[in-house]
Every structure is written in C-alpha cells, then in structure tokens.
Length: 599
Image: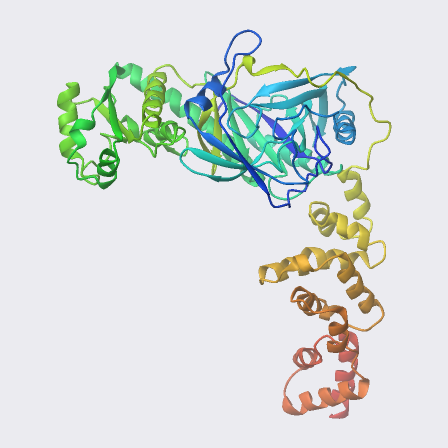
C-alpha cells in the first residue's frame, strides 16, 4: 500500500434543525428571545435497564460540573426544564422526517418508539435526549454511486452553550427541544466521496422547511482504518474541509499504530503508579506551577519506560505530546509537561532532575507531570496515564471534538447502556406522506431555464433562495439573482447592514428600475442608502431621472474638459457624474452625437 494510503472506513451523521415548533411542546424554535429566569443544576449518571452505567456519562460525571440554565418565556417551558412530562410529538416535524425517509427510500416502521439517550454534559436538563428511529435501510444516488442510508431519526436538539468556566457551564434553554432530523449513512471508503455525500444530503435537506444559518446543520464524522478503531468526531462545521479532516484522522490512527510498534520494539512500558510530587515544586521558578502550588493545587507525575523522544512523534496534525495533552484538557487541566520538552524554557530542569531520582529513571525513560486543583488534576492524570497505557495496544474507540482539520479527545465512545425506552411518550403509528416537496435538485433544473447555469448553481445554495423565489415572480429573475448574490454580498463586505434590506425594499427598488425612475447601475448605491436607514422616497429624490437637456450639458462639459479622451473614457466620466440617473445606452448615444458635432 502506498505511503499515506489507508484502508479507510468512514460515515456521516448529519443533523438538521427543522423550522417548526419544538418536538415535545408548543414553544417557538426561533432562539431570539432574551431569558428572564435562571435555574442551577448538577447531573449524575444512573444505571440503565441492564444495570450498566454508560462510560461516556461516567466520564462527564467525574468532571463535577454545575450547570446554569437560562429560560425564555416563549421559547422554553417546564418540559425543557424537565419539570413536566413531554407533550404529544410535533406532527409537523414528524411529517418532515417521514418525508425525508420517503425521499431516501427508507423503510418506515409501522410503529415509532421514542427512546431516551443518556447525555449528562448538561446540554439536556433531564440527563437524556429523546430520539426516535423513523426510517431504516435507505439509499441515495450521489453522482454515479449509490450510498446506503443506515437509519433516519427524529430527535431533540440540545441546549445552546452561552459561556463556560472551569466548573460551570451556562446553557440557553431556547435551543433545547428543537426538532432535528438525523441521517446516518452506511460505510464510505473515500474521504473526498464522503464530502460530496455531505454536500449532496445537505442540499437535499433544504428541500424541506428547515432552519438555516450557522449551527442549523451539523455533521458528525465516523472514521476508522484497518487495525484502528471507530472514532466519532463531533461538531465539524467547515464542510469544504471535511475530506481533510477524515484524511488527518486516518493518518492519526496510522501514526498511533506506528507508535505502538516502535514502543513494543523498544520494550517500553508505563511503569509504576502515579505519584503526588507537589513537594518538589514549592520553590519552583515556573510561575504557572508556583501559582498552582501556592493556591493549594497539586502536581502529579508518572514514569514512561523507554519513551525518550516519543512525545515528539507525529500523531495526525500534532505531536504525540499534544495528543496526550488533550486528555488532560478534557478534565479542565491546561496540558502536560514532559521530559521531551525544553525544560530550561519552563525553568523546570532542577525539579525534573529530582523527579528522575524519585522514579529511578534511566537514560531512555520519560517523565510526565500534570498540575492543577483537586479533584480535576487527579481525574486528568488518571486519564493521561490510562491513555499512555493504551499506546501499547493501538487505537482506542472514542468521541472527539473537531479542532481545525484535527481533533482532540472529548469522552469515551458511548455504549449500549446509553439507550432505554421513553415511557412518557406512547408509540406512534407512522403514516408515510403521500406528497413530497420539490427537491433542490429539481429547483436547480428549473432555475437553469431562467438564469445562466453558474448563477443558478450559486442561487440554489444561497440562504437567500426563498427571497429570490418571491421576488422573481414579479421582477426580472436575472436582475434579482445578481442583486442577491453579488450586490448584497459586496455591500456586506463594505460594512453595510444588509439585514435592513428586506423583500419590500428590494421589490420597490426593482419596480423603480422597471419604471425608469432609477437605472440598474444605481441599485448598489440605492441599497446602501436603505442599509443606512434611508427611505424609498429619499432614493427617488436622489435618483430622479435626468432630463436630456441636463445630460447634454454634462456631456458637452466633459468633452470640453477632456478633448483627447476616447468614447469609453468620456462615458465613464459622464456616468459617474450622472450617478445612476440615466441608462448607459442613452449616455452612449448622446456622447457619440456630441463628439460628432465637434468633428
């Protein structure tokens, strides 16, 4: 196998918010309201039906975090606060989810059962997320390939994080309970293909009444290679870099396998127990560690036999040392310090010399330290120690958070104990929808009949497509598309508040163009005026049609001042002086006539 090539297995979980009311209550899903009440809680893991505690839930509990929930009047209620049972499932959201199932040729179960999925990171007040499988065993054609769809679920969105500190996270409950359609693909064997599938499904979902904007659609990516392990990377937003993310994760897993082989060849080991070594840092010259010790924090260390130099080995897009530091960071500790680093830069040479004596370290051994406040540092050092042990046996299954095109440890991969039945919601008899909406691909085909192909492709992917569809019924489709795709984007880049420019204002501007009150060239300046708070009346006064006699006077003056200029140059000067009050073809005609008189 060529260098950099891996036996890749990857897949997608695509989550799309729906533009309906919430899934189990009648609250709005707009997320625009300010909170008026706060509630503080702490969540704890419990055993599932079989008596097992989910490892991901246990990991979160060890972090000992508190959660503050902000409550809005119309966007959250007692259901979100877990003080009232869920209401009947939102039938509009269910209909959308079942429509997606039908479009992706899924088998829809006769009865839909809502389940609880354990989640105790604070994003769900009850410690679980409600989810229901609504379709299975589907397929979708992307290019010339058929991609399998494992299942489609309808579930609740999590609460939105407002801010985070060392031991507390503040959540906004307005986001909790918004309906999500989750699409899980089958196995895909190529990173670039995976990105195309994500783009295709994402565009297909916009055929329905879905939310748009940042965070309204998310992709979780599952990756593994031969002899590696399934790793789920969550929270990835940059669709155009998805293939890079997958390739980097494949490289990370291959690097970990290479590291394992090197360690085995060296007869390396994680030797002995973790030790509290705070006593060696009482007079340290390292300001950070000194501050931790002075505030009654602790310093822990452990020995890595025959690990010398290994912390600088490549591990995906970072070093092995930084990879291990991610496990400390998952417990709120900033990172690790080890003997492969420049200890002189950290002012820690003397301390590490003492640690080498404490651990009876040999020349090829390494020492790792972590420092922080209890109990976080104790949990963190245990996690890094366990991860170092696992370096000798390969790649662990885990959930990771995206970090650029790389990722860092988040928590262990959830187990089967995570799911159990929701007894507050009765089974639902599923009825497949009889009529499906026109897909975005069908709409794109229709657009290409009215717009140039490239413009149609841009328009179908624009968040302003619904606005285009309304305006193009009454105005020139090409003018509308060009304004929404180019002019509005340019104004935004120049710092204008384009959110002030709505359907009514745009329609008025296009009508003025059609009636000859302003020219097409005046549209950017007219919209800039609206963005600055000016009215349509202000625009009419500024851009009233210029009488021909006034235009001829301007043309004559320009010709007189620029006797050697050609027609094109004269046109540019006159158009600038006319400020969009005259169409270009009229200016060209009069410039030619006046130039002819002078010859």
